[in-house]
Amino acid sequence: MNGIINGIIDALVWLIHACYLLCHNYWIALLLFTFLTKVILLPLSVWVQKNSIKTVKMQPEMNHIKAAYWGNQDMISEEQYKLFKKEKYSPFADLIPLFVQLALLMGVVEAVKKGTPLTAIPAQAHGVTLIVPLLAALSAFIMCYVQNKINVLQVEQGAWNRYGTMVFSVALSLYLGFFVSIGVGIYWTYSNLLSVLQLVLLNIWINPKKYIDYEALEKSKEELRKTQEFMTAGKKEDKKNPYHKKELEDYKRFLKVPGKKIVFYSEKNGFYKYYKNIIEEIIRRTNIVIHYITSDPLDEVFGMESDQFKPYYIGDKRLIVLMMKLETKIMVMTTPDLENFQLKRSYVKKDIEYIYVPHDVNSSNLTFHENALDHFDTIFASGFKNKEEIEEREQKFGLPAKRIVEWGSSVIDNMTVSYEAMEQGEARAVAKDNKTILIAPSWQRDNIMDSCIEQMLDELVQLPYHIIVRPHPQYVRHFEEKLKALANKYEEKGVEVQMDFSSNKTVYTADLLVTDWSSIAFEYSFSTLKPVLFINTPMKVVNPNYKELSSVPVDIELRDKVGISLEETALEGLRPAVEKLLFDNQFSRDSLRQMKEQYIYNVGNSGKVGAEYIINRLVEMQKKG
Image 1 (spheres, rainbow, N blue to C red):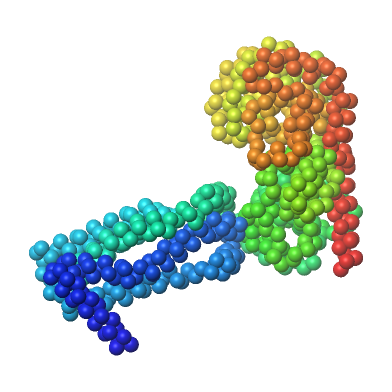
Image 2 (image 1 turned 180 degrees about the vertical axis):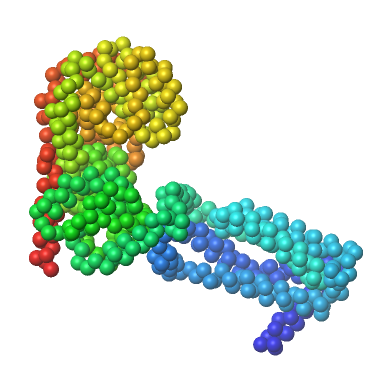
C-alpha cells in the first residue's frame, strides 16, 4: 500500500516539475498542474454530473413515495430501494468523487512539499502568506455560491443544506489555509475557481433541463408539502399528546383481536352519523362485532361501547401503519382517495373488501379528485346520478368494475325523522303566514358572505318575512367581528345573525333556504320537502376535469329542480324568486317528495339496505372460506 501511495506522490511531483519547466514560475505551474488534474479527472466529473441529474430526475417519484408512505420510514426505505434498483442508482457512489478528491489533496500536500519551494505555512510564517488562507476561503465562497445557483443537485436542496455547506466549506478552507503550505493553499484556490468554470461548461454540455421534468418535480413537491401540512396540522408530538397512552393501548388491543369481520373508520367526532343506521341494523340482526376506529380521542362513540361495538382511538400517523397491517374481511370508510395519499390498502391481507360510504348526495366526480374512488371495491351510491358517473368513469378509463350498491342516504333518512318529529311539535306552533328565510352559505372562497350578503339583505328585508343569517361555523370562527357589524347594521330591520350552532331547529323550521354551493341544500330540501334558492357564486371544483364525463353532476342538475338559481349579478330577481319558491305548486311538498324519490335510493331504508349488503357479503365470504 505504501508503495502505491509513494508512486502516486512521485507522479504528482513529476507533473508539477513538468509544468514548472514550461513556465519557470511555481504560481503559474500550480495553476497549470491544477488544470491538468481537472482534465485527468474529467470523466469522473462527467459521471458526477450525470449522477446528479439522475438523482434529481428521480425526485418526483421520491417525493411521491414520501407523501404516500408518510410516517412509515420502513416502507419509504423499501420503496426507495426498489426505485434505486430500477434506475441502477447507488447513493454510495456519490462518495467516490469525495474519496478521490481527498486522496488527491493528500497527495498534493506531499508533492508540493517535495517538488516546490512554496512550503511556508501561514500560521507560522505570517506576513504576506496570510493572504493565501483568505484567498482559499474566498474561492470556496465563490464556488459554493455558483453551485447553489446552477448545480443541478444543490439547487434542489433546502436552504439549510445549501448555505450550511457554504459556511462549512468557507470555514474549513480558511482554517486549513492557515495550517498547510501556501502551495497547497494556492492549489486549493485554483481548484475551487476551476471547478466553477467546469460546472458552467458541464451544464452547457450535459444540460439538466434536457433530462429532468421540472414541471413534474414541482407538482411532486406540492404533493409532499400538502401531505406534510395535512399530517402535521394541529398535531403535537406524541410525547406531548395527552391521549398518547390511550392510542398506544387501543392500537395494540385492535391488532390482538383475531378474526375481525368488519371495521369502520371515522376521521373525527360526528362522523358516526354516516354509519349509524347501518351499524345499528347489523347489531340488531346479527351477533357480529363492529370494530370502529376513530382518529378523534374525544369521539362520542367511546360512550357507546358494548359487546358488539368496540371503538378504538388511532391517530392519523399510527393509522397509516395500521391500515397497511389491517386484517379484516370488510373495511368501511367515508374517507376518499384510498391508495392515492397516506391511507393504503392492506399489505397483509389482499382480499379485504373496501366499501366507500358517502357523506352526502353530491357528485364525487365534481367534489373529489378524479381518481378518489378508483381503489375501492364497493361504493354505496346515494342515487342514480352517483351510480351513473362511477360507471361512466369505469367504462371511459377502462377501470375494474366496482360493486355499486343502490343505497341512499342515512343522513337524509335521519334528518327526515327528526324533522317530522319536530313538525308534530314545535314546528306546528309556527304560524303558516310567518315565513322564515334562512341564509346558510358554504365555507369556501367567494361565498355569499364574502360576495353579496348585504345586497341580498337589502332586497330581502323588503319582504314581510323573518330573515336569519346562519354562516358556516368556520366563517364565524374567522370573521366574528365582521358578523357582529353585520348584525348591528340590520338589527333594526329584523335580520337575525346566528352564531350558535348547538341546535338544528333553525334549519328545520325555515320555510326557504338560501345558499350557494353548500351540501346542506339537498339535505335540507329532501328532509323537509322545502325549496332552496341558490346563488351562483364561483363553483368549488376539486376535479378540474369533471367535464370529461358526459354525466352532469347532481350538484348542478338539482339546483333548478329543488329550487331556483340566480347569478350574483341578478339579485334584483331575488324577491320574485322567493315568492315563487314559497307559493308556486312547482315547489310544493308533493313535488319535492317526487324529486327526492327520483334522485335518492331507498328513501327511509338506507340503513337496512346497507346492513343487508354487508351481512350477505360476509356470508358469501364465509362460504368461500
